[in-house]
Length: 204
Image (cartoon, rainbow, N blue to C red; front, side, top):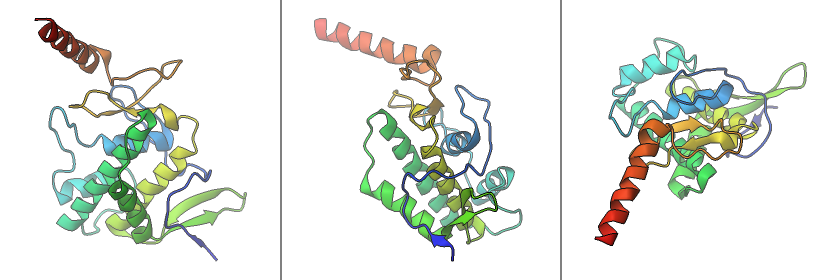
């Protein structure tokens, strides 16, 4: 009998989706998928890839999370964005950010709604698969990607940019895991300039 997964935990499972994103510092595999999904909105500059239900369908189909032609409603879009922002909060915990109960509830509800189950293949490897279709199933696959990514050694390298106006998800490829900004040339320098101005005002 399949095992029903209703809550996220740190169980090692085999990554089921491979993806690479070519923008700023990027991850690969399930880490890359999680990064790409959260970065469908640029909080600093404004572009929102998931601006309407058709855009959500296009993104999910392009990333093989859902089959084309399945209906996508405004409620589905709202649900997907809620899942996205809950994942952003979970990633923020890698650098000491707070994960609120609502974030945890959102991800657990997405797992439950998609009816995620652990499936074992003939070689003994496990993966999480949703029984639900449509957007519910797609969000289940995203949650499964987070689940798998947490078992990856690179999970702690997935971070939010320290700029409060950015919050872009980037992969910290530095040797000592010390990167704080998605790019030093933009957010890093902007934050340093801001601190300089604040110090100058305090001295004046």
